[in-house]
Length: 184
Image 1 (cartoon, rainbow, N blue to C red):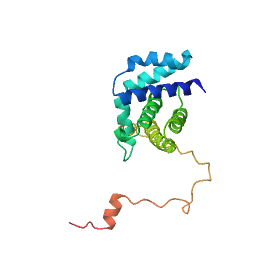
Image 2 (image 1 turned 90 degrees about the horizontal axis):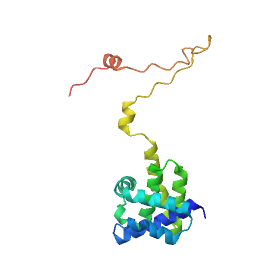
Image 3 (image 1 turned 45 degrees about the vertical axis):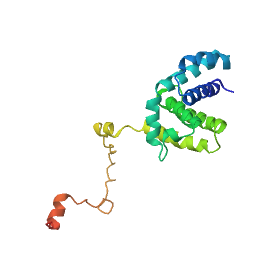
Image 4 (image 1 turned 180 degrees about the horizontal axis):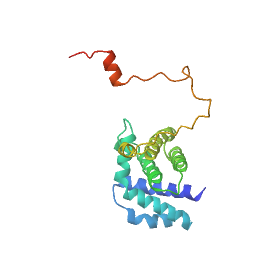
């Protein structure tokens, strides 16, 4: 098994414990990792994603809830919501992890530790989160107007003929002259 895959399993197990026991057991993470894994690199990555997912839990839950149509995060299976938290953290905060890897790893965790249908559920939620993360917010898109595409100059003799030219689009002034406005 790959080191990061194993680290995700460990992170998921610990996040699951925190969720079920409703306590802040993060100080017990190092002892848990020492007991479960000998590889230092695996433990470092597991610690990184566990601590950071735990610290951002409320924000991650809001993001997940925002795309989970007809699902309250509190009503999701405990294992599924922790897989979603972990993968959402990776999607949004880990530049060293390609989005496809984060999603595929989450799907595999779902298949391995939850139900057969969990993989599709997890994929759907994470795909929406990935799409939202890659699309700029509407306010930013409005602030930065797109530049019109530059038209390549036409070679001499290739100018459009009247048959090729598009029909003129009526403007508000040409419409008002052709049709009288009805009063209401």
